[in-house]
Length: 147
Image (cartoon, rainbow, N blue to C red):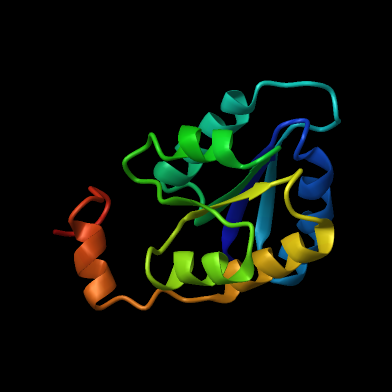
């Protein structure tokens, strides 16, 4: 069973809670890094926790949600092993997996609604990496791949 760690800030809390059942239905073992209510929190605390957990290899992938997704993307992509993709549409979600082998999906809780977010998560979680020439490109910037 693949593992996913999911975290948000207060602006992403509702969306985080709404996509957890979908992840379970897709066969993921889920760890919720928080928060566990809508009280105001600092997004870097959760972005760092999720990115570190994925970068360390303790989880197969992660999902981060804040108001726009921008802050969480910036935090997560500071880690060399992380390829976090902000995806607020289906095409970006699919291509982030096919061409970039994204290991963290980032969503904007104030940008996408629940129905679209569920479609994005489903597309992202079920799209395989194409490999081939895309692996060669990732090797040019990602220390986590064999050169």
